Length: 509
Image (tube, rainbow, N blue to C red; front, side):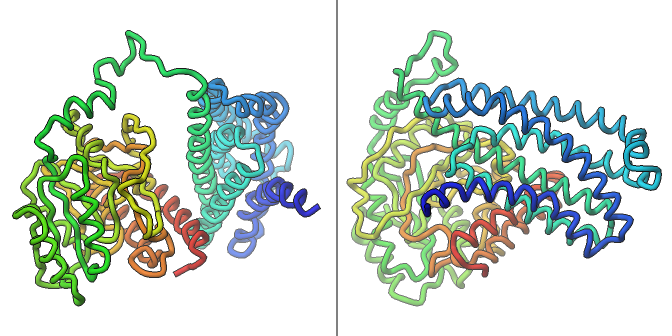
């Protein structure tokens, strides 16, 4: 019985969250608005609820069984149906919203009575929610198991939080219109998170499908102009003079216990960097002695130690190291992280063949300190994927220890920040310098503490990191790099991610 209850919990919670989301706006308006506002808003939500039933019935009755079967078989038709379904649902949502906006002025007084005419303009505004909800229904329809339903529930929770927060922000000033705008914010967050979650799930299905058939390269394949990844590595990177034209910059502050491990991972590269720059950020322990000991241990000139005149944080330390770099490419490594032995051979090798790319990165993996990274197996490495503008704005996927980039980029780390300063640099590269960013899917760097909520280090200070992200969005809006709509949308999404991080870390400070 307990197992049955646990398995059924996500399904019951999904229904509860759906109801809670529908009532959240009315509840907030009850506390902050007038009786007339509540009545008008209730009319609007009633009409929208009726419109939302169409796609729900369509997917549950007609398409859900097929999606179940295709997902179980790893059938590539699932991905095609998902993409086409999303396009059709957006189009039909826009059509339904337009028809509703035209009909509402006549239907509201006919159905609800003349006294509810004040609801008409609000309903027209809130029809913006229709294509968003249609898209949410479509994109999340493939996530039907109990485990995937949990992810859908997290998306719904984030939408409730975003809508409620927007309600408390806008209703006191704009009243009924603030409630309508809050509903639009909630639907936007819900749709965006549903798309991201579904895409991650579909990648797994695509891998499962690809595993069932050999990979073939047709004569007209768009990748014909590029050598295969393994061939390119063998023909170019391995033929170099055993070093990559890369300056590796490591900011160092009280890292005497971990810096040797980090440097050893550089020395163990199958294609070693030309130089390593250790920037001492006024450490108060034995770090300065350890840095010079490392410089003496390796080949003369390979390690350069730079001392800062005051403790300034990782942003300034990286910028100063950047100024001292002599190579056309730079890479960053945190003093408590390490690299896979083939990282530079793979990452620099690809960038040297694509000189127009400004920056590349990859995922990182948390491992135990006793793990020997030199013998870690490396999964198959594929071509990196370009990172579109919206994904750069949604989150920082470029962990500092994963970055290899061109040294001639104009962007720099924000030295006034000690949190999210790396995201500031990334946004500068992609939004201001208009540089192309690519991400490998294979982890090539290792960390030794949790990314969120670690007991020590900057990752423990979640709220300050959130403030840093919000400040970044505001800065790039002020200089015209992003629009006001982008600023508001991604600020709300950032706040939702902050709540998720707090839940994962079990702390809210």
